[in-house]
Length: 443
Image (cartoon, rainbow, N blue to C red; front, side, top):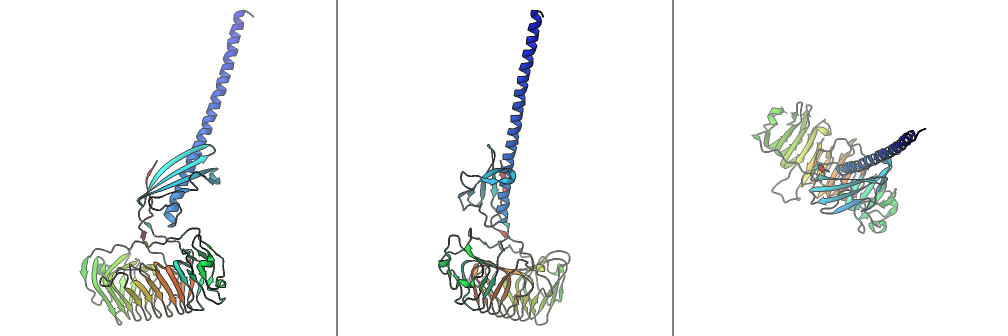
């Protein structure tokens, strides 16, 4: 072989070696980029998924751990720690900043192996759907008192935010008064909070992991005053006779019964004062009837509103008498009156006496809800008594089925509160002043 041939072969061999080395480097770099891209995508997915998880929690839990107090910051799980997410083979960290209860800034960091991805989003803090946590028989803010009678009984879990002395007051005998668990406020000592015979509690006594918050939903705006109308004792009202009308007074007395036809859609009846005594109102049609009452609601005798109907057919909103001092007004229902529907009183207290009943949910921002005598609250319907700012008192042979939210709860006589999550009607479609958490931006 000549020297030129040797040189040519050497060049070829060198070229092949160089090409092979370059190819290996290219493949290595390509694989590295693939791994880096995969890791980046996984970290990205974890950060985005953690943010969506937090948004859903904020929107669906009024006691969410992800909402700091006004102008405060919280971290999850800590300022520098990461929460393991096994399903995504990574971990995440969340930081929340509440800016004046109007904007919530969330910083979400996803981590996959050694790769980090960060995203920032802003949530507008606005109205949200009222959807309270109703998974127990009773929640009270300050006091639960079951010393009024030997037969008082609560069936189901009970909780209280208070950790003050003697906040839960039981009887002296060994008879069961709470047939379920009792949870007291975070950090509270049961020996301080509970007074009475501990054998009154059949379940366990423990602590809430956090305080429960129950805010009153926004009381709805009433319709603007429309065409004035006078109810003249008609036995049936068609939609065109009451829709977009305002009745200063709506009086039904004696045997002057009334049928209200909603037709094929939801309707509104707007009245100044609704006075029904020993008369019946029957609702027909496919729509729901919402009654807005401005300043007077008087239902007595054997009066029945929505006679023979179902709870979801009727909703009554009562604003309040402007001539009575705020929170001093009381709506009293006696005799054998019956309202088959839900009632929301803005500031008035509510008394149910005798065999009077509200078959639906009862909401009030007032000071008291009193159920005494032998009211017909023990029917097959389960309902919510929602008075987070007030005192709920059950007196005598009263059987309340459903759930109660109160500031204080008193049982006296032989009262029974039995938890039943199968509420007989849907909760009113209302909003809370905050908690909407619409996305303003996402970077």
